[in-house]
Image 1 (cartoon, helix red, strand yellow):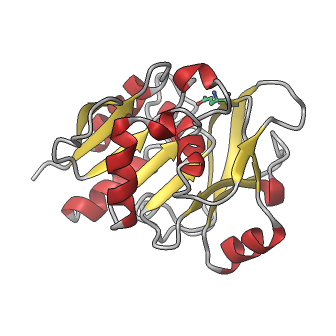
Image 2 (cartoon, rainbow, N blue to C red):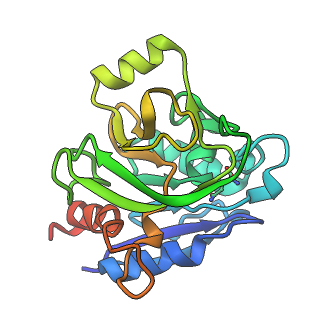
Length: 225
Ligand SMILES: NC(=O)CC[C@H](N)C(=O)O
């Protein structure tokens, strides 16, 4: 059985093709989903890609959150359907309240683009199970509003429940509270990540291939390989 993984395109999405490519390289079939479509075409999981959906107007992800495809994704995600939001996708997940907290302007007030070292803090989610607990990986990071913020109680709960999925190492590129680069929902099926694993999946373009694990993890979950 080939797993089918949907990648949503919003107006202004930028990294949808790279996410599709990462899905294919991991061994699954990528399925293009359009933001106006309520139907998920029987995919087994969904990736919300990076970019500037709706031109980042109002706040990043604030308008995309109300697109028809998100109505279905929100409903399904609450029932355990696997969703990975990368960068702008993470912003959409926070705006949708599938994940707590918010992504705000980088503390430098500049757009940041760099190769970023991360530590996988929870290798127990469906999107991270190909990694070792505590594994250090390097993937690209590029955002203007990547600073994860939440109140102390929420941050403490995220830590206590193992819901901090990835943390920045060496440099905190945007002032994220507690160096948080990615989090999950309580059930672990919804993961949001600010850096871009889909841009680190083949040696030719680099940096390395350490991002591929997010896409092989879900495959392992879906088809048991
Ligand atoms: N790479 C991205 O997805 C960028 C997300 C968003 N537009 C930002 O600048 O923060």
